[in-house]
Each structure stands twice: as C-alpha cells, then as structure tokens.
Length: 355
Image (tube, rainbow, N blue to C red):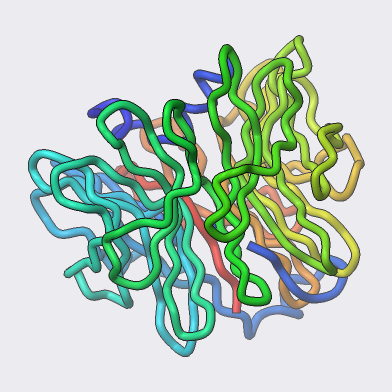
C-alpha cells in the first residue's frame, strides 16, 4: 500500500493500463477578465515524513493543511459550497487507509470508510445540503465501487461482487447520483458509469482492450465521461457520450484525459501525453486532436483538473522543476504556471474549483 500512497492511485492505474462541470462562455485570451475569480486547489504535499492533505487558494503557497501530522493523508477531491471548502480523500489510521472528507481547515476528518478495511474517496460533490463522496473500499477479496452520503459509514455499493471496481468521478444532477470509473471484466478494465444505487453499470469501454473513465459531467440531458482507451496500440485520451461505446479519441498514443468540463456547448478534456521527450500537461477542445499545451517542453508535467469560468480555462496539475514536484495551475494556453507548491517540497494538485 506504500506504493499507492507515494505515487497516487491514479498514477498506478495508468501504469496498469500500459472531480466537474464548468460554466461560462467560450475561453478568452485575457486572464485579467477573470481577476475577480477565486481559484481553489486541493491535493497534498510531503512534509518530510508524511503526505499531508491540504488545499491552496489563488497563488498563496501556504496551504490550508487538513491532514493531521504524523500520518499519511491525501486529498483527491474538492468542492466549494455556501462559503465552505470541502476536501476529500483518505488518511492512514495506523493499519488502514480510511475514506474521509474535511471541511474548511478543520484537521478532524469526517470519516466515512468503515473501521477494519481500507477505503478511499476519489470524488466529492455537495448537493441539496448533503455531502456525497465516491470511491471504493476493499471487501476482503475485491475493490468495490461505492459512494457515501454525509457521515454515513455504510456505503451505497455500486460495484458488483466478485470483481474489482472503482468509482473515480462523481456528479449529482437533478437528485440523481452519477459515479464513473471502471470495473474489471475477465482480462480487461471497462470504463463505465453507474446511476444512483444501480449495480448494473452503463459500460462505455468496449469489450476489447482496457479503458478507464476518470471524469463525468451531466449537461443538457447527456452524460459525458472522459478517460483513457487502449486502441490496441497504447492508451489514448478519449471521451464518451451517453452509452456510446465508440469513444471520441483526442489524444495520440500514450495520452490520458484525467478531467472533463462541458461549457458553452464545448467539451474540454485535460490530461497529458508523451511528446517523445517528456510527459506534458495539456487540454483538448471537442474532438480536436491538436492539444492546447500548457506544460513546458522538456519538463514533466501532468494535468488532473479543469474548470471553465469567466471565459477562461483553468488547468490544475503539477510539474517537476528539476528537484521537486510543484503543485500549480495554468490559465488558457499560458505555459507559465501559477505555482502554489512551495520550493523544495513535493506537492500535487488533484482537484480545482474556480468561483
């Protein structure tokens, strides 16, 4: 489990294969237009002994740390509602990783994962005064996709027994809970989404090579999922619409879409691809296979979050500065990141919200 903690669950899933809807108009080119927007970034940093769940605001490099000292904690998800900042992920209780969420800068988590088993929150939504968290727990034999509501430690399990399943993304629309991720079927991982407590998934990944859904959005009566699809030559950043198992592939081989936003009639997917020299953060618009690059050439960077607000596209991720990994975000097509992770300390962006 140490490898999961140190590298991050999502990175592990990508190796095996080898949290949001935005609002606003089409992206512009003048970031000053959105100067009144506040940017929230959730993730974690390494304090020299442990990973500490935290969040940053705007360009402040001093994080609001929610993970308690002396134990590993990671924040994968973020929501801002009614003036409160919610972050969600897990902490290590000494024996197990426990799914949880934090509110504002309170270091005492609301634990949703049951005692005596490992569990993880990978997605979060606040709707109708309730806090929804989605992820998975280990039932002793398999990983089971599920979601929790508020502080209830009894999950709504959507992943069927007998095979591994993971809920990686979550959205609540019209009182319905949509979770997206994948399940393992025979030899392959199949991208899918579940609605409410239905354990029969809507499978979007075809019966052939591997696929994973990392993000979901429900807009205009359509369900959009984004992730990665292996076309037989390698994983490719892709998205699906509704129950169509034929993906729209936007990335070349060795690319991944980690995040999704649907705004102004456009579909934005964010992730990264290997340009032959390094992995670079980028995003795609609609079915255009030419990415908008944000990661600097020759420098490793990854994008894990996207939001569209005030006519601008915000991309959350991190880059390697040669000595450490730095949490950051980019605006539009600017290759100059706003770095929030402190110098000399490994830090990671997992989620982003702009309000």
